Length: 380
Ligand SMILES: NC(=O)CC[C@H](N)C(=O)O
Image (cartoon, rainbow, N blue to C red):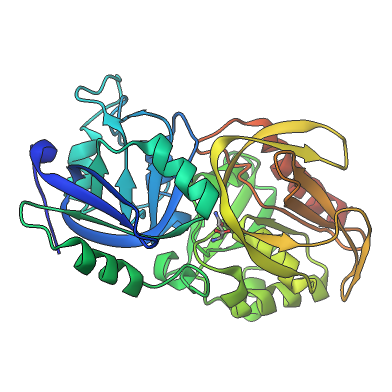
């Protein structure tokens, strides 16, 4: 239950981690209670894109940047129709936003969308705790009459875990829709929506691609019904080990040899389609300042990440898969986690991070051009 509040600043709030650690602060956004997986994001900016990224469904996001809300909330930067984070943790929210595009405060927006948050938390201590112990379940409780600590902890421990969660269908579109190409139409792409961010079809549209965004439940027949030059699999929430339907659709696409590109969840699905495993990272990668090396060129790029799982593929050898040879094309320079895959005998590749760059640096935009080149190659 949540109730919207203005002036919740003085309402007490408590953050309870499943291992029993407790942080006290003040209500931020809606007052009530909420649960999710506690994860931290190291982005200094781009909170509006983070909050509205469907991949954050069922996660409580802790911002490592101490001041949040400085540029308010505008009508242009949302990545989907709503905020998806299940809770929000900040240290020192802006009292007065300042941006020519700002329409309302972040506090007001969270409250209007019923998102329970907490401010005044030592987010550095909380982040260090999550880094040492790993991502875990959390609850935020706010209001003037809070349950006792034992009751709150028991409720947190009853909340569902992220491992094993199958969430794409909860966030993806129910109806197919088309994002028209900008300028002359050169290609048609079928984009399977597992939790797609708004910027992704836009990045394709600006390259002359007409994008048919399909529900997560789309079949191989639905994909080919749009007569695609290429097929795209999006980012999305939850555990890739549950994405059996998407894996089987992707295998259907790989069998036909249609150019294929995947982002984030889409990369994990390509990993699984090729026969690799996926696993849960201790605390994941989230933020807009993560270094990745493209091993096909040797170049290093600074990139936007939001993933808690990763593909388990060998870094230093070419693997034989049911769809021919495959290799790890990109790697995270912080921890050597697999950040991209490519097939050597078929026009298919994927990355674990976010070339659509919303928010984030644009270093990885070339990946959309690679997808276009694969489609051109297929026509030639
Ligand atoms: N942004 C994404 O697509 C995330 C994929 C997956 N849910 C993960 O956490 O790893």
